[in-house]
Length: 317
Length: 174
Image 1 (cartoon, rainbow over the protein chains, first blue to last red):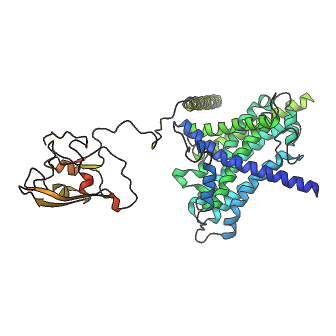
Image 2 (tube, rainbow over the protein chains, first blue to last red; image 1 turned 30 degrees about the horizontal axis):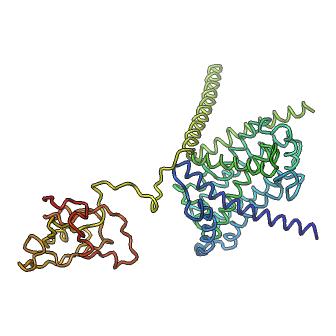
């Protein structure tokens, strides 16, 4: 009973922190994109626009609860919830500091990958249930992309797991006490980074949401707080990917002088900055280029990397 | 034959590798460009607090009914601006000048002159059509109002408070 209460409180705090972090990530992204484009970005609501996410949230809550005609109601309501819950679920196993994690699961990284795979259902069902061609096209593109790049992502993760000798994220971080895996697994790092951008549907792989072609993709028919849930899911996914890059390749909370949580936050911020930087720079790729790059370059490269890693690990034993 | 095909195939593979490298390098170059832009000051003008120095002299803004140097009204009530206005935003009610009540230098003057600033498209045709150069488009552009009624400018609002107040030379000949 006592441990259950502690877990509940911990989860509550973590949930609050995460949702706040995601809200402020939208602000950070808009401000950074503004700076990249020689603008200011939102700076009117509160000092430096710090209350902008709050204003956006309030606006979204008060919006009309719109449901398109002949939509599949249950699925229509369920999809954003799936998208958001699976995105948040991942944080149960990510270590933020030396002793700061919700759960040390032996198969931590598997849970992360599994949860993000279930998240694809949110996208597909959302696109399907809206009864709208743009939603459906967007969700088709999205699921094709997510499934293709999940493979490359997993291959990159497997090399890390082989190097660390454990599936637990806590153990993986502990294994990086000496050398960060970005130095031992540079190819896996590059593959993971590219696949992470594709997994989160962000520029230059933002085909599922290509405004110029598909209005808004799978979330076209969503408004109000249901839209906000999709949005939260997406931004949580970005923070997740940043946390994973930090955990798997940049030594997690490890670092000199500063406490672990600060190092973790700093590294995560660096990755998020990189995500925004890419978005500000690179134009969208074509769908055939996306597929060809995923299947013909990333997957073979990932397989090769796993093979070489396995041979070296066996030889070193 | 077979050897030849193999060589060609290998050449193509080398070419694609080189192409990928070149494209990757181009991306890095683009990233460097955007990173440099991150440290430039924004070019945004923070509008309500900060304004641009001045609009161009040819800018078409708020209308003025201009005066001669001696304070006489230029408008002679000919209603050419009413005829030419594509959005029918102008209303003129003309009246005869009398020796006791001489308002303009022509036979008639505008007893009432209204412009609906909501209808106006600021094309400047009224200014072009005006034979005496009475109606001009000024440089003020902050014309927002809270009611529709407040956007119908009447003659006292349109007439410049003193000769030359609109920024045009009161001595000019048209």
